[in-house]
Length: 449
Image (tube, rainbow, N blue to C red; front, side, top):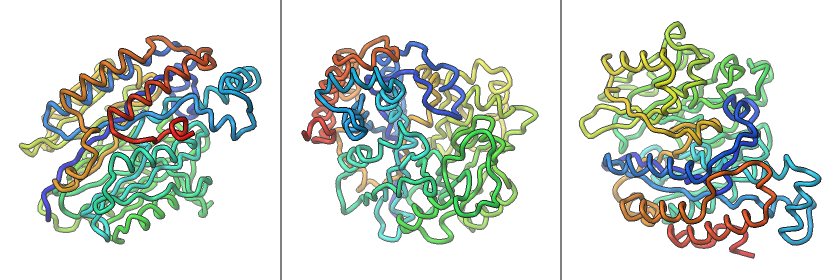
């Protein structure tokens, strides 16, 4: 076994962060539709969290946002002329399409990809598969550039393996790490990868939600596990409860979070909780640490409380002393039942001993909390050394990116602003500069034209 750590790579919020209500099934996204957003505040809130985790001693990285509005998609859909003419025609004839190709949703990098560490894979490399996000059009256009950014961030093919996204059809709907959790007694030892799905595409007799879509399929998870070279006993597949999807739990990370030897989840998270526990225990085997199941009772914290507060859309981080810290959004303090439960939780006989609160209101208003903003990558020291070091958070990078945001970002944006050609030019100028800061090369189409 090689000693290893878990790094978090957060998505940097893009310059076109706005509230267009594009994510059906995401309650916060729908409730805040058409409100003014503050891209500058959103980016700075994310950077503050990244810097805080780096200061706590965790390896913290940055993933770049995408070009938005995405003119190549509008061209592919029949709009012609100059960029300015395309924007004018799109806002006139298809304003919701323009809003979709202007979304800054790639900030939620829990959906960027599924990652399997080298301790789990057949070829002993870290494997990445960008999520196709086929259920939502505005997200389905992300995976190509996401793949380029991941390859520029993790460039060494001796240590990192990059797969293309799965076929972009409903049968293989893949929402990435938002439905994937890894359990292990040590980050450098073989672990158990838990894949959570909303439905089976080919088994139509399986229970399905009736109100909101089940975005992630069993078949997608099985394909990713095969491509990553996981062993049969190293992957467990569990169905999310259809009722909680219908209650607004669009991803598993809105109702459960895990880390190391702790699975923290709501009583109603899974269709068959007993089977989930049994399968994980069997896969866990005789690892030296106890596997903790921390189940939150529905009579203390309801599913509605979870959706409103994003209790489970939190980061669960292992500290050097063996305890864990839960990084939560400020909204949990505003829910009396949730906050009361957390005070009791840290007194229980589990590794979770600390709760830290962060203000991420700009992201939360669009339906994404601390866990949505980060992609987890377990790596050995050799693999960390092979990462593009310009993307790793430190004092210098934090100061540089803060100045970059202050220089390029607007502090107010409404949906009508998306047709402003100057916003496109501002965004491109900002991203071109960012690729130089993060040493990514030409990952955007406007740089390759």
